[in-house]
Amino acid sequence: MKSNWKLLALMALLSSVVTLAAYNFLGFNNRDVIFNESSPTPTITGRLAALTGNGPMAAPNDFSTAAESVTPTVVHIRTTITRTVRQQQMPDIFREFFGDEFGQGQNQGQSRPRRQQGQASGSGVIISKDGYIVTNNHVVQDADEVEVIMTDKRSFKAKVIGTDPLTDLAVIKVEANNLPAIVLGDSDALRLGEWVLAVGYPLDLESTVTAGIVSAKGRGIGILQRENARQQPTDPKADTPIEAFIQTDAAINPGNSGGALVNLRGELIGINSAIASATGYYSGYGFAVPVSLVKKVSADLLKYGNVQRGYLGILPIELNSTIAKEKGAKVGRGIYVDSVVENGAASAAGLKKGDVIVKMEGQPLDSDAQMREIIGRRRPGDAVTVTINRDGSERDVKLELRNRNGGRDVIKKTEVATVNASLKSLGADFEELSAQDAKQLGITGGVRVKKIVDGKLAETDIEEGFIIVKANGKNVKTTKDLQTIMSAVKEGEGLMLIGMYPNSSRMYYYAVPV
Image 1: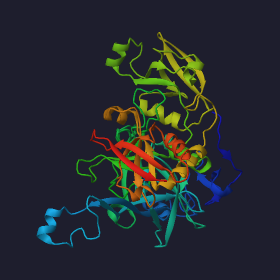
Image 2: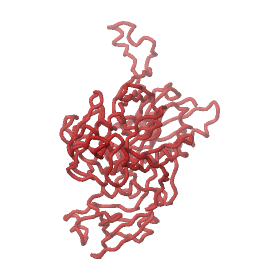
Image 3: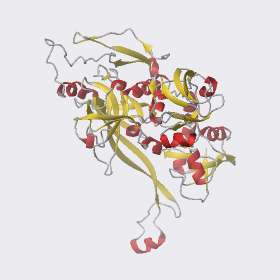
Image 4: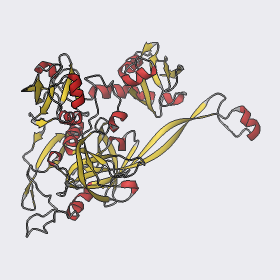
């Protein structure tokens, strides 16, 4: 596979026996970010002396050396989220009973914005000595302030560099140097039953280490699908969340999110993300994003500002014996190609409806989650070899992944960032309504007010969650539509917004001074 990772000739001798390969990614402000990755063969980190004479030999089930090595690289993350809510005026009937002090300072029929703050807690993993940290998207999502606390009690304000809801990963940055950075391991080499450690800050406690085994790999649990309804599930080009979790029985609780899952060599093999529990607390099942995906997503966020996704251009169906019989497939396992996108990667390579992808990059395919994880590590323009079963015979096909526009180039975040910046004058963050949500509301599209901050919208009665469907008489389906309409507003004119709130068919009209 052609790699877009720039390999540095950087070698470090650790405990006289370990050589590490390092990858160099262009970060913001032209700063280089160094990620340390373990060598392909089993190794130890600098703090794990492996040879007799250089240090104590760790017993197979001795967790202490790995725990001591990893703990300084895992940080506590505290976030503050500020939201604007509106407090309705006290009706006159209550004034008659309780006096004029109720609702004092408000005009009749109006509401007044009020700021509310909430706090949350999670974990993160230092991946570079100059302060880059990987965590979960849901740990820092919508945060106004992010604080990072090291194991030595030092505290830093952090900046969110980039987020990816589709993998629930994020990269943040603190201004510090010579930090202890974790070594990135190989999640592909994990075996079922292998011992692993979970390191983080559960339940707002101090740094905590728990142990367990790898219970399963490539596990899809549907949690990201529920959180990310970006497009209709039948759209072959939809940005489908990637779930190929490492499942472990190491105790993971709220607050562990974004923390490290490591092997007994002290190498990062996953970012803890979710638990399966009826109570919200540990019930024996924890899930981590594999480090193979963490490497690629964090690299993209640092280099491009967003994640570069390659597309096969098919509508896949995961096979079992029942579905195989219904579809007339000659094999009972693999990914059935139910349709092919015109001018997509699969179409260009000659794939067609009825083919079954049984291998990808030489790996037998058992699940849709496994396939998406393999594709998720690659970018547009990367070549992938797939083995297909067509009418009972197998053949290898090499295809070149495309971007969502059908091209081979990376799509940077510049255009999106420009649109968002132009909308900041309204004093709100916006997000485009998914096709699925629009269909449920009976509209063709719209832009949701995600968060209100200080600005024009804060001066109106608009509340967070309001869905804009028209602005100045023109349809609004994307944030770019809203930006285009705003740019045409002349000085002294205003913006008339028409829209609705979720779970309501009533239309609302708001005049916004621009």
